[in-house]
Image 1 (cartoon, rainbow, N blue to C red):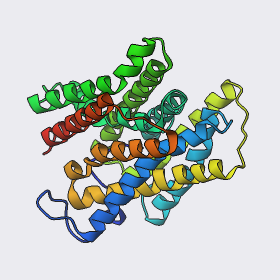
Image 2 (tube, rainbow, N blue to C red):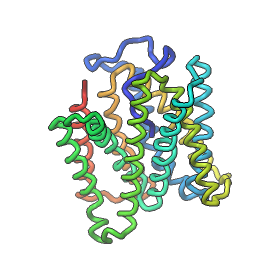
Image 3 (cartoon, one colour):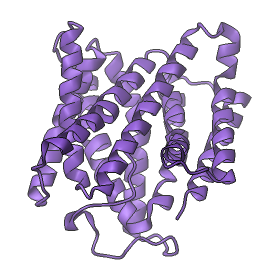
Image 4 (cartoon, rainbow, N blue to C red):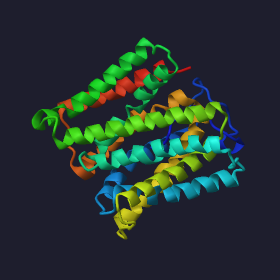
Length: 319
């Protein structure tokens, strides 16, 4: 999971091939970048499940994950010649970005993973595209288009359909409802962080550098929470834990981030945004194969509604 953005900074982040256009057909590199992004984001949810069941606290899991990712992001920024020195006022923005996106967002989802299969986590998070548009309209005091409103209603209806059988069976006090609320909080935190990211971009702050600093502050905040709660800073030496940690830090965070940014520059934000429609499908297929997720009529209809809602919002938000 990474903050969605519509711009790319610096010459190293811009492919020399061609500018973004909604009219140009996909090239082989575009397909490769798209596949990498979707696979990395789809599988990341199951990797989170492996982390949660390891015995390492969620706060400490985030410390290890983003400590690795932070080092890689600073290396990327440094080797590509991006600016790394900023005034204190900008660092306050980076700290807000880190707390919202690179700590609280993930922390809610890690706790949510204790109640829900990984595929359902991804479905709730996919509504970030809907919430982003609605929050953006609220902050800018602009009335969202009818298409965006319709997409939002359809998307939320899809979530209700997917979770209805469990909630109907166990009530609002059941574990499923707890997991859903945690994931909603995580998505809201992510979307609030996106507003901070958009503000940074309007100030022409370089995206890779600001993300590197944001990850550092997010890591420090997770470490502070772990210390405050008395969580031991341990690591699980098992292959599944270490493998999931490397996957989440290197592939899901840094490589997918780089692939998505490059994709934005090549095909534009609107078409790149369709990854949020695709990855929940693959995440649920992974849950079906590895976690025994059972499909129901409600689940199929709900997923179709969520995908349709995202498509309407993305198309309604195109410029």
